[in-house]
Amino acid sequence: MNKIVIENLTLEYSDGTESLTNVSLDIVSNATTVLFGPAGGGKSSLLRCLNRLNDLADVESVSGKILLDGENILDPKMDVIALRRKVGMVFARPVVLPFTIRGNLTYGLELAGEKRKSRHDEAVERSLKLAALWDEVHDRLDEPAIALSGGQQQRLCLARSLALEPEVILLDEPTSGLDPISTSKVEDALDELKKQYTVILVPHSVQQAARTSDFAAFFLQGKLIEYAPDTEIFTTPKDQRTEDYVMGRFG
Amino acid sequence: MNNFFTKNRELTEKLGFSLLTLMTLMTVIPIIATVIYIIAQGAPAISWEFITGFPRDGMREGGILPAIIGTFYLTLGTAIFSVPLGIAAAIYLSEYAPENKATRLIRLAIINLAGIPSVVYGLFGLGLFVLFLKFGTSMLAASLTLSIMTLPVIISTTEEALRAVPQSFRTVSISLGGTRWQTIRRTVLPQALPGIITGVILGLERAAGETAPILFTGAAFFLPRLPHSPFDATMALPYHLFVISTQVPEMPIQIQYGTALVLLVFVLGMNIIATLIRSRARAKRQW
Image 1 (tube, rainbow over the protein chains, first blue to last red):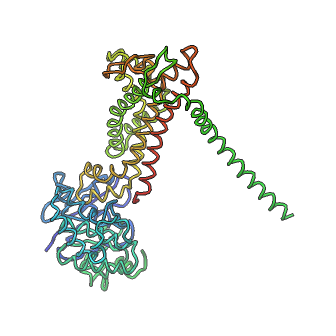
Image 2: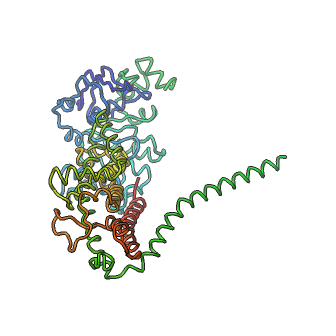
Image 3: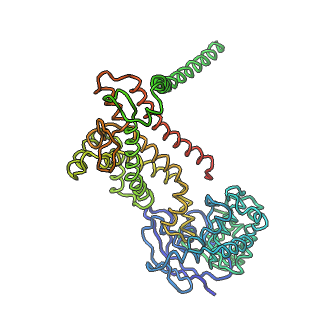
């Protein structure tokens, strides 16, 4: 089933950097879709359109449609606050807020006006378990989050998004600053997550793209070059440019 | 030959280092000397009566209570007007204002306002608050004048403190479904608060020590009682010091230095509080 349908999305920034040209893409629910390609290809921009975080950037123009469950999220009347609760995001660098571990996890709920402690506790435990962090931190939830290691911080950021029970999770190179062990923990967590959520990932390498994806989209200079189930795109790519990139001939 | 150059370089290094040390000392010594001198000269005047009594015998005897209370009131009044306004303006400039010509113009104006001599503020306050708005020579007019003088300091230090909070905190908060105001209120402001408090105190401290802005707007030469309403004029430490140092013949010198010492303690005390807040916050900061 298609969770997100992107139709002819074109985006330009005022400074002329990284843009998107006429991108159309269907994103399937309960699967991991990776957006990969060389830097500056528009992957992050696309990701940031999906929760309208691009509203904060200097966008010159956007056209086309992004339908989430049939609703165009680019509509000016869209409730972006509700959208961002529905579409969670994890950034490349783990940014823990200057609160306790618990404080980070309940932050989004508090913003949404959820004050009940029972709901907070429930969300903390559920999201930490989903992000495979519960065993490591359950006995020190009230310590500053900054005391965690880099890998733990990134899983905390993942858990923080999950605490809001989103439907879609966007991850922008979530393991780019992590060691291999932490990376595999995050990837394992993602593998579990896709059972319940729609996961959209910008991987930090082709290898990670191949490891994690159910569907993969190859972007080059703002254009979607090829989109296919993962086995196809990494074994028998149709486009020469995809093949060159996957084989490591450029990038 | 080689040895000669090596030696020479060491000598230059030593010389340069000594010169820098000397120059640093030259900046510190006058400050320390001033403080020590004022303490030495003023301490004998300090007594319970001096702090809590009214001036007697044409101010040549007795205490300086009305001036102490006056300066306290004026500082408080200045805080009431300038702190909310200054912080609000800084939040607007740092978090909401678009980066365009108008914003740049406002910033430029604020920077330049900070450079205006305080006597000019005094004259402006006289024209606007005392005469035009008919507040009279009053604590209200003086506080408002001091507020205008203090605002640029509070705005620019607060803006700096807000900008020091990492942009990524804002992005994360927004991505978790926060509105802009929720983000400021729950994440940005608490993190910037120590810096804001420091800036506010430094601004108020300057207001507490100023003479020129209150000269025409609210300061009284001598009052037999404490001010009762914002529309009363008041005595104030810096102006009192000016008066007893220049306007009163046969003034005992220890009363002058005693007054200076009290003003110094008042201002230095605020400064120390600001420094403590800053260093404690720095130790606790998580970014």
